Image (cartoon, rainbow, N blue to C red; front, top):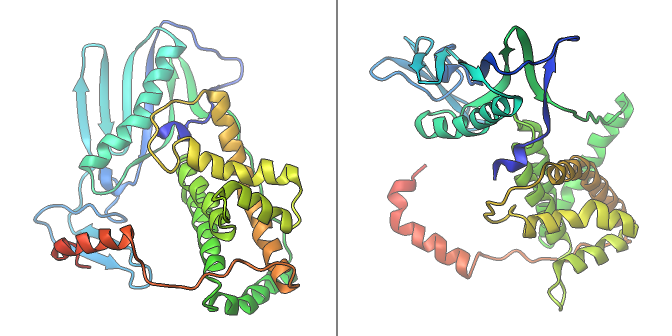
Length: 337
């Protein structure tokens, strides 16, 4: 569940200040996208009823937005509850109440941060996210931020970047070979994983889906043999590519284990301890570059004829998948593009 998004966070205070409880407090949540909250005219799919509007459609990507001639005004909602005041002004939600402890403050913030966007998503056309949280306890201002983070980059040169394009262009012919379907699929799954990690607004937002796609890279490149054990097959394939046992067990096999065992590919409502989540996030952070290394080495070994991806002849979908599509055909009028 959303536990994948939970990264250790702390209250950042100005130097020399501290919280004192009990105290009156104010917590502010800043939302995106702006159009949803009446702060901006365009950039989303929220249109004002019975008002002329302009639809913007990108025929290259399929992305589309709408802009009402008379857009929403900044939202204004005031709720007075027995123990708190709730005020939404535009895209800023402010909650004022008395806090007895740091724990009570933390529970309020986590409840709103992880719960309210999901509830609003049911009502709004555009899924909202909370981009930042700050406020004050007594006279002490704070920011609720990640306790720590990592920054990883890949250095290059002008020549190296241009040669990388040339190498990729020369390899494009491999993808059109009918028996290289597994190679094409592996590249696609890795591409999707990296895209998800880059597009995430919340730390860990698409972490489960990234794990799932990393696992698919191994599953498609190293299909199980007679014994049907996919992890053992992946181990054998990675060993053939020259990876050491430590690299295999630490950098690759966890993707398959996480995908199958802890709710990535199926529903699991269990809650992880913070130290467990730290390990999972740390693994995914490293996995992007580990799988990058895997695919680069794979191309090198293919070029030198030291490795061959298991051939797969493309064929029509059959079995249960085809049965599902045939069932959909009963409702095809509802699915027209």
